[in-house]
Amino acid sequence: MTEMLRDCLQRLPLIAILRGMQPEEAPWVLEALASFSILEVPLNSPRPLESIAYLVRHAPPGVLVGAGTVLTEGQVADVAGTGAKLIIAPNCAPPVIAAAKTRGLISLPGVATPTEAFSALAAGADGLKMFPGELLPPAAVKAWRAVLPKETLLVPTGGVTPDNVAAYRAAGANGFGIGSALYKPGMSRDELAQKAAAFVAAVR
Image (tube, rainbow, N blue to C red):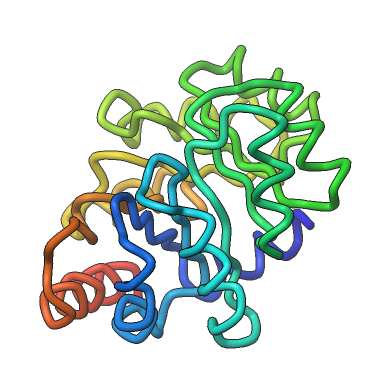
C-alpha cells in the first residue's frame, strides 16, 4: 500500500483536503480536481461518508480516495466500509494506524516531531503527514530527512501555498496536503478549478 501512495504522489504530489464539502457538491468538485490523484474528505465535514462513497464510485481509475481527521478505530472501520483506501489523521495514534493496516488501508498519520515520526513508522504508517506545516518549514523537512529512513514519505500539511512548494520539495518533501488554500465551503467550481491549476503549475 505504501507503493500505491508513492505512485499517486509521484503523479501529482498534492492531496486535496475537502473539509466542509457537502455530498451534493462532490460531482462538480471531482470535475474541478480532475488532475488530482489523491482526494481527502475529513470526517468533521457534513455527512462525510456519503461524500467519500461518491468519490470512491466516481473517481477515475488510479485516484486514491480517503478520509481525514480519523481519530478512532471505529472510524477506520466506517471509512473502510465506503471502499476508500486512505486513512489520514492529525495525530500519531498507533491503534488507529494498526486498524488501518489490518484492513489493508494506507495510513498517513500526523506527526510534529521526530519522536512521533519514528513511533508512527514503527506502528506501520505508510507515510507521515507533517502537521501543522506552518510550524514545520522546509528546514524541518531537511533535518528530518537526515535521520529518517530514506524511503519515508513526507507530506507537509497546512500553510502550504504555490509560493513555497518549491522550497519544500528542494528540502525533500514528497507531497503536500492542501486544505483551505485550495478548497473552502461555499466557493464556486470555477474558483476551485483556478486554485487547483495554480497548485498544479507550482509543482510541475
